[in-house]
Image 1 (cartoon, rainbow, N blue to C red):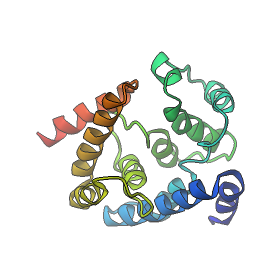
Image 2: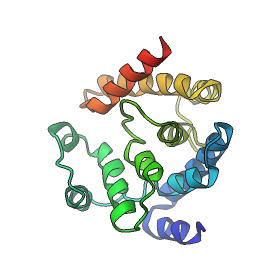
Image 3: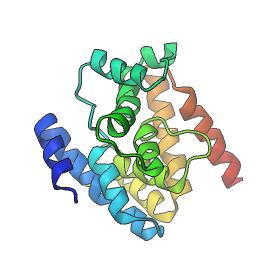
Length: 187
């Protein structure tokens, strides 16, 4: 079931990014099963979540445009978010995967969004907490994610927003909306 997709990412990604994708797939499956969702589908979304990450920005822009999305100035000013949009477009339009959970999980795994599904949160959090991650506070992040998806989201969003602000980078509005949504749910 996964062999063709694993071969595809192995052939198109660096060794580092391939390893990361496989670690995310494992974590996504684990989290999905824990939360009563389809572990196989989460594993596939994890495999494919960074499928376009190492494509040149121009190629990613083409995929995004062909999928009907017009990049905002925030998106154009932050190439780090391209791959979530181009990845979702690639999976849908090139690979022919139409499952909205897989597409949504890939589409929002970097920025988050308002009213995320549990599946989308799982892919987002698996990317943050996979076994290959070793940033400061990763153990706290993993513990918060084990506690609840919302606790994990809140901690990760605070981490992301603080990092983006401290680096004087553009903050995607979806991230801010996601933060407000999580706060609203938790209060």
